[in-house]
Length: 449
Image 1 (tube, rainbow, N blue to C red):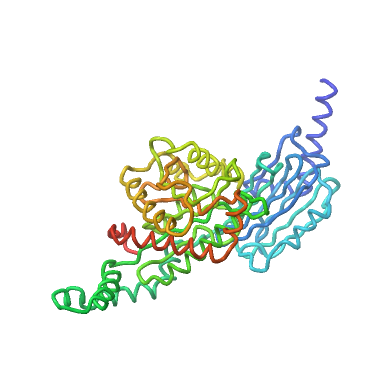
Image 2 (cartoon, rainbow, N blue to C red):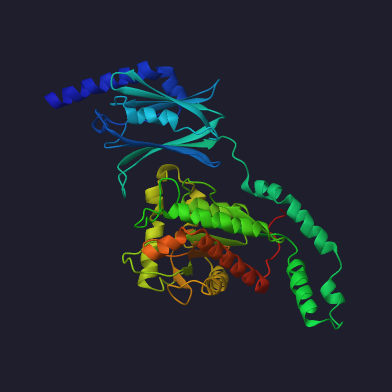
């Protein structure tokens, strides 16, 4: 046996004894999801670069960023519920201690985090939980501005049904629409009567809007990026994820005021949602239209103007469109997804399952919105563009992506941070949505909701 092999064998025995001492052999067997990296991957003296927590109703993500991979052992305990994590080859430092203060009172899943030096070169993290969770723990290689990341995603053991939540929240509006539909058709009643032009026009517009739709139209609003993925960053430091969330919330509020529509946000806070999950969420709530909102950057700072995209089966409509689609599709790498446990249905969804009919409907919706935006803002191009955006690949939902402006352009970055501009963009998108459904009333639900 060589000297190196003998040393490694001693280290392996030491590691096994350490793991047994930390968790107990029975605990290791009972946990069922132990992560124990090989001896060559152990990061003795690893440096913690940052710790972050991203709470949301969907899940809470905790991220430890380090200069080398972090080997850990972990187990779930009950009565009370908690996740215990031991990080090997690490000394407690102020950055790790900061994790304790980062837990927010409104975090749905984590009540507190306790951090301590459990043994020499072993730091123990204890996540005290508010309810049982299904943790997904995985590592991410360096990408973009990040070094190695150890990610803890804590999902509810009994996640709520998003469709049921949406139906409950819109029950009052649904009932009001049903009552309105039960009233006599005033358009038919007054069709042959002569009325003053202004009164006739007002009556027709009002009643046409109310009587055309026999059920609520569901609009899935998708603010791009979030959490670990900031999206594009402007020269003044503006982050795309924050700008588009602000615009998306304005659009949501406006749709709430439309009696025959209801909005659904794929994310309502600063957390990351994988591209496939965004599509899956829209399908779960049986959305009639999917609108993804972005404010991208381009390699040339003078690039300007809003754009609206639909999916393409034949390649991108321009070099810039292809470049932007490739950049957006890389969002999962930056935001961080657990490749090993990626849902098979989501993975299949990202294949080219789109239909000609879906793309045709998407083009019509995109054109209606582009026309409204072009009424007050400069356009990057005067027509709808197409590219292979992964987030637009719902096979049964018209899907569009709105680039509200280029955050990489200093002038447009300033406009994107202006509340008046945000409001006008949201209003233009809503008007385009209304125009689209005025010409393309939604079909009956796939199932009753």
